[in-house]
Figure: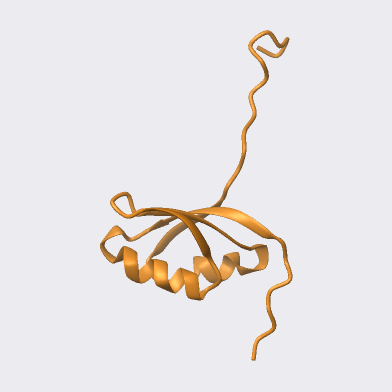
Length: 82
């Protein structure tokens, strides 16, 4: 039996084959992804996964891209950097 992953979960956004969406999503779940949102028409989904499991997601047949979810914060309009 394999040992559970110990790395911290990270948010990810994935692009997958829209023609095989349900099949690919199921394989991603089996690879450790917790799905938080699905856009089947676009072939994209979001979720969380232990960081050390990202290579397993990338290896799933039908996955085109795996990107870490990022938050971007812009400075206020009156900031000197504007």
